[in-house]
Amino acid sequence: MAIKHSNPYSGTFTYKLSRALLGMYAVFIIPYLMFDTYFLYIFSREGHKDSVFWYPIYSSALLISMLTILYVTYKQRRHINSFLSHFKNVEAFSPLKSCECTSLFGTNYAGLDIDKGVLLIIAHTESGMRNLLAPKDIVVMGFDVKSFKSAELSGQKLTIYTGKPDIPFLVISHRKMPALFESLSAMRNRPYGYDHSFPHYVTHSAKRIAEENNLNLVLSRFN
Image (tube, rainbow, N blue to C red):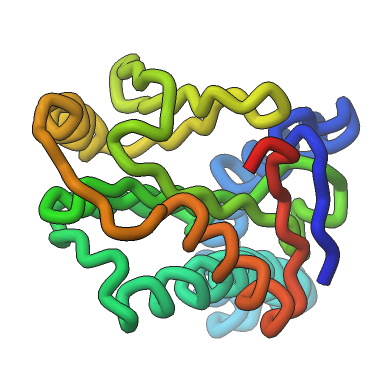
């Protein structure tokens, strides 16, 4: 496990290009493989020689593609759950299901505990090519209603401005974000009292959890 003080969203050109190509592959190539594999299977059952040859190739390519997506998604969700389960088990963070948002492939998580007046964000970073298929770098940050500068909603994208120069903002996109933003705005007008610092507790616990799970924790120098 390593503690990193780096920009968590400044992916290299190669990283961004590779991510775009993988996205296009998932959107266009995989459906094409599924379509062709289906018909090659039918034709191969009828004895077409070309289909008998190409069916194993197409079906293998489809299987490898699907297994790769499932593996990366599983790893990302497992990373998030390793942190999230701890904070929930010790009852430091108890959000309602309606106040939790996880991105489609498990890259990012945001949750709001209205009763305690705290926000938790867990996000994989774009800090290197290795994180594209084997994600290990992760940001874990907790906020109370007084510990972030501001929040902004654009469509379904919520941006939290942290007030930290090296990690100035965190972005989560999800269909629940408009409702989450309204709850967060209303919370800032309530007089919450805190016995302990939730942001510092999250940072302290995240270091241990990251070490136990062999993850690289991206921290702000200004914690």
